[in-house]
Length: 149
Image 1 (cartoon, rainbow, N blue to C red):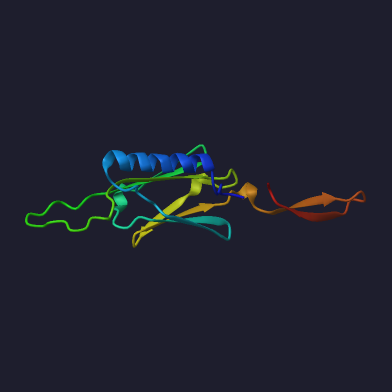
Image 2: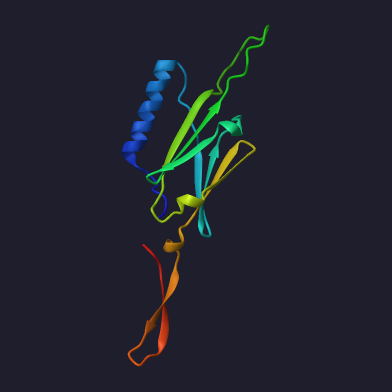
């Protein structure tokens, strides 16, 4: 398994922080919904960030934890305009994903298009299946396929 699907303590901590922030700021918790896929020798993460300026998106990896953060600015106030409904959150968004040690964090790529941030994380070469030659007692060679764990 290359992605750690869930850390219940981290998930509870994130929920608590979102709820606490909402109470302090009088706003709703800010969500960054994510889907994760395995495609060939890579993992793809897709995060919804509609209305976010790509310049504000920041990705960092530290100790196999990928942190995605972004900012959505509130529209400037317009004279004579009265807000009737304001449900779209503005401010800072952040999400952390624990990556398995079999992923190549040195070659992560990211693309932002139509409000979706797509992150491609390749599987490390050392984690890919490979053939190992085995020499029989009589000097003949054969190969065995292995996978790294």
